[in-house]
Image (tube, rainbow over the protein chains, first blue to last red):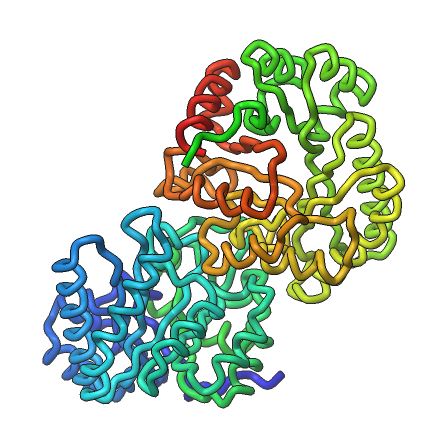
Length: 272
Length: 272
């Protein structure tokens, strides 16, 4: 399979967590990485206007804003607060010139997963009209089932697709992250089901043993995931947008960011 | 929901990993735990005949033998060796008077999960006639997806059901372990699909954060799993066999076994 297009490479900012947005943007610019995915806690550090200025000054395009979501809460007021926070995230995405807000849907506050999944759907439905007005699409990212208790009750692409279809909006889609979905026996069928609703494609790798449950992702090529096969399936559905490298790993965070970007470019060329 | 029947309580021997089979059997007998699930590495320590003698002397019934499986291997000779090993496990189950051999199907030796899943099916089909002759049923236990790279490519109940149906034998079924399946959005639908092919029901709990990826299971009641709801769904399908407490946890292993059995009985009564 041919290497992916270098013009689609995007640095998901969590990969260089120790860098500010300015450092990340300048790093990408210096190494000809054309896209960046911006995290909200990095925007907060300097404000939205300054963030936009930095991204523009470095000639970058924004592939997505990470992240909205976190909908389930027992208290109704709290659920409304979270919906409002998602609207702020939509505004940030629009202002930074991306049409994708990635959703990490949130864990369940109690043992009732079924009700929490309903709160996720209600939250998405409440944010959607606002997102449509702003020209921003919401991308449901199913997370690996090992994060079901603390990050997301949406755990498989099948579930994300079902949610997308239930809500049924042109401004709602799914995000395929190989780390979260590679193990799924129904992955390729569900990528077909997702079709043109795929809004993003994220890469990293699963090494054995995993260094850590949360900070456990590795550079592409260092694990067991057949990334080219998954990329091929996603591209077959017409996805030709940016490919984000999203690696949460303490050792990678602790090394110089420039080195990470260099490794990332090489691994992208060879292993994606 | 009413507490489960104490006459169905089974000690899965891995819960008291530091005990020999003799210690575990005597421990169960002393605390009126009627069932035990026996692990093969514990049988090996003393031999099959002695194992049987100990179990009989303590008046215990064997709920299952753990474990067969581990089918995928690139080398064909190696796959045949593993099939032979599964036949030995079938003989052990028959000799110990249980009709359930639990299968942990095995990880993929490479990135081709689809081929590895075929090897699992082929392995099961090769063992089945032998199992039928010995009156032993093979129970496919889907493992949590976080074990897909190192323990089992069979990761969801949906996948286990599909495999059961493809092979289509009265001597093949599935095992539902709450730790592995609790997160699954399609769990209750798949328990219905499993119907009367359910051969075992295992309990423990998922605490947040998980103490360890492998040795990370907790006592029932200490985590987020709605165990009674899952038990209710399994019982609705007619399952009324033993309920195994299977906890892999270093702290629990390191405490006196008698204490573990006491805690387990109480947690079973209150939280299962």
